[in-house]
Length: 198
Image (cartoon, rainbow, N blue to C red; front, side):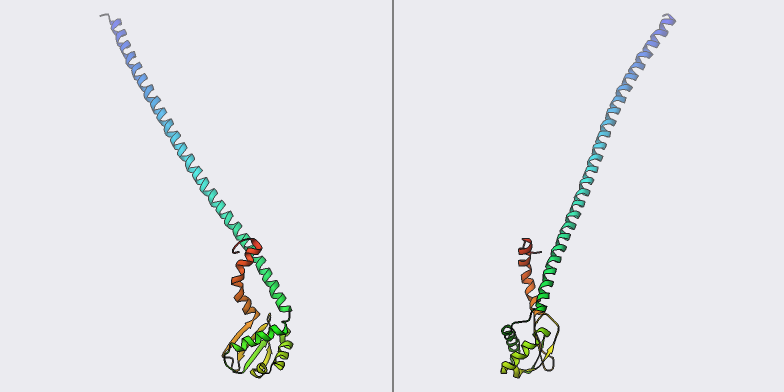
């Protein structure tokens, strides 16, 4: 065989092998690029989902925090309104003198709570002292049991104690109000705000 033909045949075979290798390399490169692209898309989608999930969690957290702050602000305002109403009630009680008949009934109820005829000392708000002294002069039974009447600042009502101070019964408006409030609060909240509690 002619050396130039042999050379041409070898070159042709080498070209064919090179073309095959090149085609195979291009195919593999294409597959690798496709696979890398798929992996990139998967990673990008996973990252996007992660960021979206974090954003949703952060958004929910901020919304819950804002909602809590809002409820707390509403509760503080409701408490302020109820506190203001109660302070107005206390102010009215401080100014208002008890009717003599109501005061008489309150004193009798207080002294009867001792369940004995021990001598008693009575304390009353300055505004109720004149009426209380009249009651004790007019009602001999009560007058005999009361050693003395003393002034005590407060909203009204009476506080009674034994002569030695060992036993006392607090029938003042402050105590009565503190006993009534727990039961009244739900009704107040319902009337003021249209709900069961404040």
